[in-house]
Amino acid sequence: MAPPAGFTFNQFLIAGDEPLLFHCGQRAMFPLVSDAFAKILPLEQLRWISFGHVEADECGAMNLWLEAAPQAQVVYSELGCQVSVSDLAVRPPRALAQDEVLDLGGKRVRIIATPHVPPRMGSPGPL
Image (tube, rainbow, N blue to C red; front, top):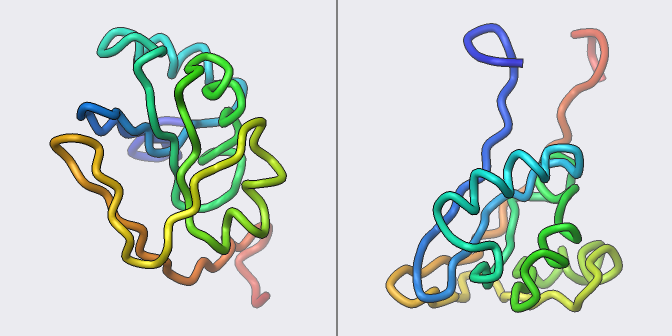
């Protein structure tokens, strides 16, 4: 599934004193993504894991990352933690309030909650 005709999955590493991985990928992608990550940093140095919303391509491998990086913690919105992440993650997540800033040591990230509209599946007809 590659461009220009296909679909891509992307993960982003924000390097800092406390590195953050944005989007974990699907569980089946963990070996590939973690190998790529390890070329930049040892997995044990990962401190934060986050994602845009809760779906397999964004957080399916979340618990595999938490197992590989013992100091890592998921950071997500308060509502998202209450509704899903606190139940799904093998360790308690850190909930951030709207517009709260997380200092990664050299970089800062902020939660900005936005509405999520699920993708349309199936035919292009009306939902």
